[in-house]
Length: 169
Image 1 (cartoon, rainbow, N blue to C red):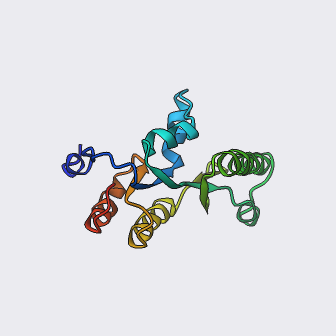
Image 2 (cartoon, rainbow, N blue to C red):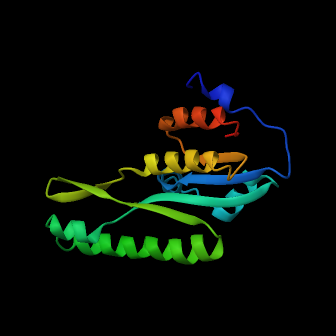
């Protein structure tokens, strides 16, 4: 474990008036779902806000860029698969996250590398977007407590900067 984590992971006293914002990096939840464990986002919000005032939950993810894929020469059946995946994710975001749970999606287009004749998607910029939002809202005094749902060590520095503003993470 990184030496900074114990200092940053201490439990804070419960103050019901505290304003909480939750920042979820979906790539980490996706890996949990691959292990067969399903995560109920509504319950997750309740547990993480812990009786405090939940201001907003942000959901960070990558989304297939069909136009880019076509420009890169991606063809069926892979192109059709990516289109279906994009439609399914957009439907989930619209119908479940946004309408049912009030979650605000923050999406970046996926990037692609070609290997063995196939296009492999990867995320680029999601961590930067999430970090900048966390810091921006701290500086705007939009929350008292930020909850970051991520397993990425890239967030250690932004957590320190946010704590330097007097906010809790």
